[in-house]
Length: 265
Image (spheres, rainbow, N blue to C red):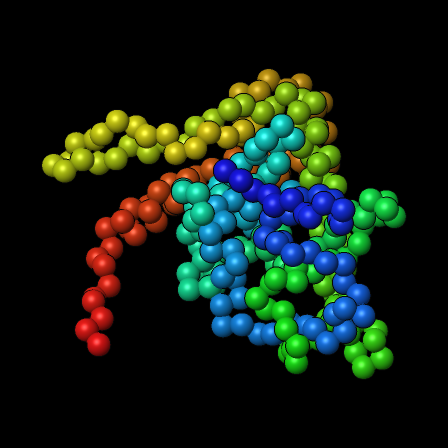
């Protein structure tokens, strides 16, 4: 499952999902550009199975989909589909009503990226984003070449997001230090014709917090997790895992849905 796309060599370094043509935002190159309102604003996320989450998003995200941890750094991810290149919550270019939209998606096409020459983060946009264009509804720069209030707000959003990313890294480091992770499997037992049950099928393997390891922690450590807010985020993650059943139910409904009528015109 590929979750990142490398930036072109010799430019900015890092890896960011969705961004195929990142460019540092500047008035000379992008003075006439801005965002156009689209009927299908989230079409770019329609084939994204998993999206990174920050720890502060756990309570809201847990109401919509499973939150898992993946990779050596145990990065938190929102699972939005059972199959690669599938987002079960984006239909016709928009998120279903009531579904939480992760900040990672909401910041697009803006992003902060590493500039190795200046050793700092710079504001970039994805020049290939479908919502970018001239004569925009929301311009990046005003007539004087200064960033508009809209652009300033987007930059602040990206800066706040990076702050949350650092907080999330600290959260995951703490869970690793306490050895709270375990490997889990999401499974589905299909119902056979006639009412019988088939063999359980593994849908995904991932890292999750172990409830047994949590219970084995000293009382003082539990109190520390409670005081710093980590305990609430852990239980939001554990509660979210019920969302695997929702994904499976959605998949079954779609599988049994009759095909659309043929176009006779």
